[in-house]
Length: 393
Ligand code: ATP
Ligand code: MG
Image 1 (cartoon, rainbow, N blue to C red):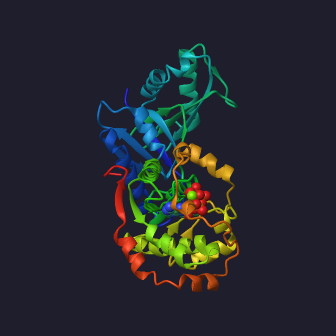
Image 2: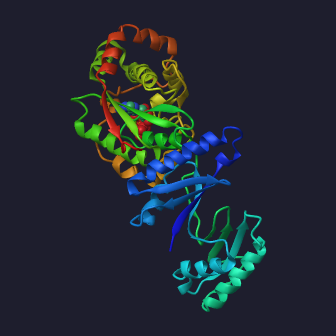
């Protein structure tokens, strides 16, 4: 029996003149995501995307899992396809639902007739199909208020569809529809969650990771790449720039007051990230900072860091508690990897008493004791690029 997937778009349906652009981007992302599983047709009509497998060997469980990670889809249902004929719809429903209806369950039928030429109205379709199913499966009962199973019959432009479950999609907007931004990623819990959250709002991602060998190890870099692999399940292809940061950190340590190490380091991270972001078509930076979490994340410290950034800095976790951030990291499967015990360049050079209310002009003059230009350019030039996610993503 032919099974397809019907995916409902959320916010996209509310877009005005731009709607087609969002829809096209979503269709492109769906096709890329499903490409490794076989050939599919994906067509959009009436706020629903119909996804039809074209190869017999396609595993629809895998297809459903892949689609659950595509931003822009709010809900989706696996459905059987049949001709727009009431007897065919009844027969298809009987065959398609035979597994679920082998149990003692209660059910109701809801119908949507978007093809107004179909001779039965929605309430009539529900009545006919519901009555038929109740006769065919003596162990099931009708419950219109609180049913175990809601069967939906949709009579649409080219065919009729029957389904019995609605799964939660990833929500948000299609990746790429909002432009591109650079995520500053450590191996911690927060930054992969921040990356996921901004991809969910439609941003394609480039990733920037600062490494300070030999103080930070290759294993620490591999951990960041593994985290990005998990994020790319949702965000698609990501280029990871690993920036050598040892020389800059050593010079900060030699030349700047200890209490300002972290804030100056973060400003230099921003200056380097600006350049990489601009070179890669990004229009914003993203960090995993949350207000007050550590000394470098007080309001004063964030303002001082922002002053070194030449583009908007998005901090999607700014108002979240650690507990809330961890809940998301569990959901997107990054938590365990984030907890692997590898060092980060930020923690290797931490001062004992960092300034929590740094004055930007004082920080700037302490920073200006050194001309950083050549070191910044050297760091950018020597950044190593790793491609994360599949080529088609
Ligand atoms: P995370 O859990 O993501 O490591 P954190 O709570 O440990 O965050 P910090 O170490 O202060 O916080 O870092 C704050 C933010 O700075 C991170 O979320 C990330 O965006 C960025 N960051 C920290 N270390 C690095 C690094 N080595 N490379 C790139 N960005 C970094
Ligand atoms: Mg960290």
